[in-house]
Length: 131
Length: 362
Image 1 (cartoon, each protein chain N blue to C red):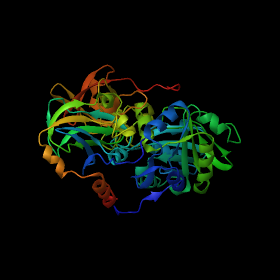
Image 2: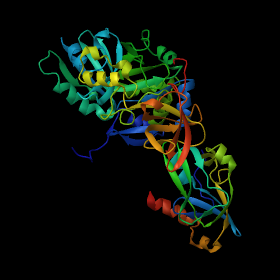
Image 3: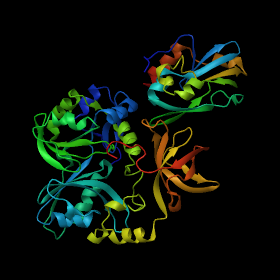
Image 4: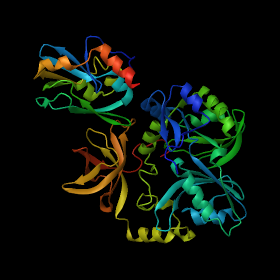
């Protein structure tokens, strides 16, 4: 499993999701905290390419050995790609949650929604408060 | 009864925390669910050896001239068939055949038996035993606090323990007292993983020394998470999921441990269900595609709901979703195609033979 980290270049959603925003596109995943809380991921049920996802709504499911968790969209957009590598080897989410363990890519519907997400410092503070 | 009672700890609690265990509340105890991870712990038991703290399980001691008569009345199996040093699996039933618990009884002396119960049922089982002991020369004692229990399981478990023991280990379904790692133990050839293995019943104060020796000898600490995936691959029912008051042992596929001719409590109901056939039967299944079944998922055939999943997980050994479900009795034939409704998505499944994962033992 990866060491705890929250990269500065990402934006964070309070449901423990991250987004890497590049223009009107975004790559999505779950944070180190989320994968650690879930434990070993055994199954990723991805959204269909071409469907729309809505900010703050579930768009996929991740199952660990003992639990199932919904994955919330940090931003709204159309799914342009899902990560086949995670589909084949779900443990990639534990091993590299911000890299090879990304979940989906979006074409953003409302790029300005990103202004409402947290930076890494704010997300770390949220985790400390929850602790 | 208070629902906010403090959680109990086993004598090995400090060892678990020191080993980095993730600890969860389970049946009134703080128990380790995993250390390194469910998958590596599961695979260690399949490939070499794992050690489980199962001190949360209950023990009831039944002693006296008519101890065997009392147990024969309470337990579904034929208690008279256990000789000294023997062990036997059976159910504890109500008059209506509903299952109060599934247990293993060891005959440790001619007139002394030790019955190991599920953790969640230990209080209820003891009351049931005590309530039925009247008029018999048999004393029933709740020995739950008198024992810690370790399970060392896997193809390497027996060899590893043989090196720590001062005498030959008992074979499968036998027990004997021995010194293991310098402490007195009831050594039992039993387990809940489908692998060969040994269970140790110990004085609580002796448990840390035995645990440390077993781990030092190469057993991997394994938690409740791996215990559940291992037992489900082996198709051992779990009380509270696959067994309960609302069904008989026959429906659960445990007719083999019910000897109605012994006249146990519930024998009439069990005989009736055996003769007439249960409405539903517990069937093991595998997913033929993606997904993970979970308890409570409906089992479907076309538009009809034909059953319900009672245990489900992702199998670390098989790499697919597996489970057990109560299905309409005519659908329990291996090869039967079913669909499981996992939170709104229908996932194809196929009924299989027991066990779902075959070990050298099975």
